[in-house]
Amino acid sequence: MSVPPVPQGKRPAESATEMVQVVLPNDANPLGFILGGTVMHLIDIAAAIACHRHTRSLLVTAAVDGLQFLHPIKVGDLIILRSRVTATWSTSLEAEVEVFSEEILTGQRRMTSRAYLTFVTTDRDGKRVDVPGLILETAEEKAKADAANVRRAERLKARRELESRSS
Ligand SMILES: CC(C)(COP(=O)(O)OP(=O)(O)OC[C@H]1O[C@@H](n2cnc3c(N)ncnc32)[C@H](O)[C@@H]1OP(=O)(O)O)[C@@H](O)C(=O)NCCC(=O)NCCS
Image 1: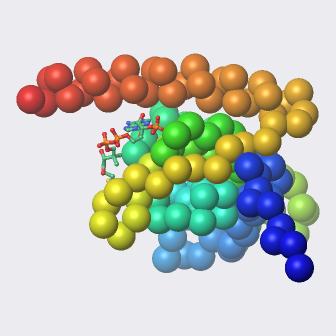
Image 2: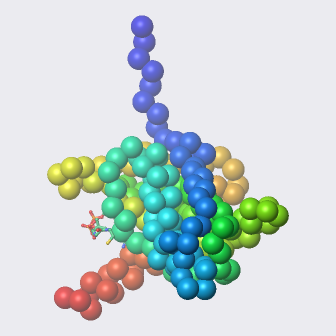
Image 3: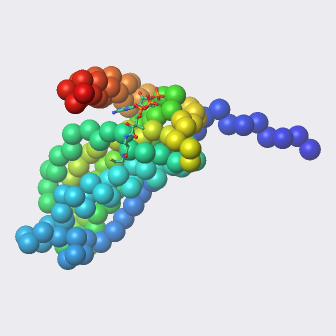
């Protein structure tokens, strides 16, 4: 029996992830809105799941791009996080996470945040692992990958500046 060929890459849809949970009082500030830190935690998890599904390796978060909160999400609403891999490089990759609120009774949905996170692969000994390529088929996927390359250059510049200031 012939052995199937090793896939050269994966499509963004193969690792795209949707997480949904209800906002509970324990997640909220005294105004009854979800805490920013809780949203950041969920963003990190949603992005990491998409990247784990793409790489099937261990990962660390290397960078999170500027994050904004457009609307509050209140206790009792659903918080929905959609993540997908936008670009891959040698041992790192980027995921986009879009966050939405959904009112349970009306179904009204609003986008509240969009974030870009970079993860770096590692094995249990701390060694880097090669990332499978990303198969870009649609114009939207190609545009997202182009934009990710621009962000990567900015991130690496920011990292170099931070390193030079902290040494
Ligand atoms: C992120 C980290 C692994 C990078 O370590 P490093 O030795 O500089 O990494 P390397 O030189 O081996 O680079 C590995 C890849 O990461 C990329 N990278 C490193 N820092 C990056 C950053 N800030 N933004 C984007 N990409 C970054 C490199 O460009 C390289 O990409 P490529 O192989 O795809 O071309 C390291 O700084 C670290 O462990 N940080 C702490 C991570 C952590 O604990 N996260 C949890 C939250 S604090």
